[in-house]
Image (cartoon, rainbow, N blue to C red; front, side, top):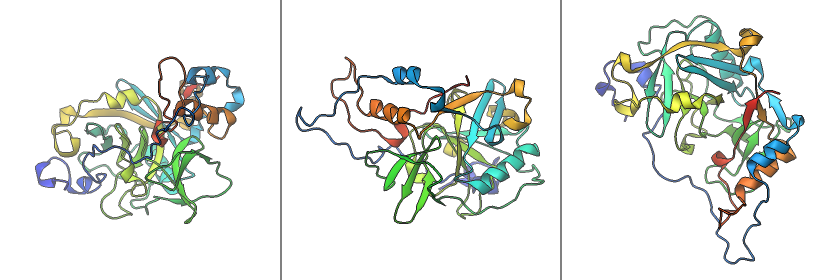
Length: 317
C-alpha cells in the first residue's frame, strides 16, 4: 500500500508513519434534504457572513493562546498553528517539547499530495529527539466534559452521531460512548503514524490541504488547525513520488524554524483572534451559511457540512 521500495530515499520507519490510505475522491457522507415544496423550503437568511462579522462584538472573539500556538517559519512566510490540548493533551505537550528543542529547525516539507495533505518531517531520519517522548499512545478520542463548550450543528453527518465546534475546532462526538474527537477538515493538523496506534510521536506532522478526508477521524491524532498561512502549504509543488513524496532533496521546501509563540518576542508575534464558537453570533454565522440569502442563491441548501462552516480569523483588535 505504501510502496516503500519505490521511494528509496525515504527511510523505512518514516514511510510507516505515513497517514494511511491513498486519495479518495468520494463525496463526504452527509444527508442533504431537498424541500419538496416552497412551503417546506428553508427561510433565506437576510444577513451575509460579512455583515455578521462586522456587527460582532469584542466578546465574540478570543485571542490565540501563545503557549498553544506554533509558528512554522518558511522562506515565503509564516504558518500559524493553534494546538488543541483539550483533545490531544499529551501530543500537544510532546510537540511543544520537540519545537523547543529545535527538532524541526532545518528539516523540510517532504510531501505534498494533490487534494490530500502536506507533511513535514526529517527526510533522513537522523535528527535526535532530546527531551520529548519517542512514543505516545494515540489520542484519537477523549472523554468529553461539560466544561468543554460544544456548539452542535443541526445537520446530519455520516461520520459522527453529532458534529459541531468546540473552542473553535470542528469536532464530532458520540453520546453513547461519551467521547469526542477533532475532525479532519481543511487546515487540520495531525500526527502521522504507522499501523500501531502508539507509533506517532509528533516528529512527523501533516496538514489537510484538500477535500476533508473524514474517514481518518478517530484513526489518527488531530492536534490542531492552521489559523493563518494555509496558502503557503496549498501552493506547494505536488510531489511526483508515491503518496505525493518528493523524489529529490531539492524539491523539498526547507523549514527555517518552528517556534512556540510564547517564546517569540511579543513584537514579533502574529496577533490573531478567532471567532468564539460558543456564542449567538457564531450560531447566526452557521445559519447564514446553511440558508444563504441574497439575489444570487435560488435554492438555499438548508444544510451545511461540518467542514464547510467558516471559522473567521482576524488580526487581534
